[in-house]
Length: 272
Image (tube, rainbow, N blue to C red; front, side, top):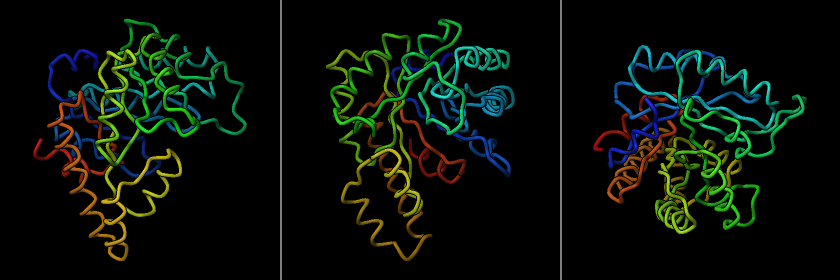
């Protein structure tokens, strides 16, 4: 099933992201029980898609849910990308999230600088291509308007839907979606939501992606700073409210960054 076709339903798609665990077991059965529209699988730094595509194949084969494999390019050659795509296709995966990714020290010389270049190298219609977008601008960019230009270039290159980086204020995403439409973005845009589970987690994500914290999240972190369990519960409740509000606002989709935790899916998918 091509994910771009799922967006034709006219309803807000609820989907989720998982990652290949370094150790332990990925609780796919518990996550799949919430019947997401699709599940995306991240790729480890360096871009090795073996585990990613194997998990994506299991999601489709054992749980009957469309899946999507992440594919990064900044540490890759065109030959390695062709090889990765061949493996993904061999395992029956037709949906790919095309990303630039983070450069790995000591990695081979890359043939790519931007995700747009990777998108152009992915065969359509053999694959349905998703891409990333940044409601508050890419952390390496000082100009949100130029970010919208790059977004349009990804669409023109062959992307058929976008999934956003995390944000904590729905108004930020909704304003971004309107600005994107005004710049010619016509494909669906899903909102990426990550619950607040700990202070350390949020501080790390802010440093990595530059997301801002609205006052209500700051107050939540302050109020429950000495009670991790209460902070986790309050963060999950807040994420559930965020998801329900995005659905009421008519978002094309909501993509939950589950961090492989079934309780995240439980809190964010209930009441949809």
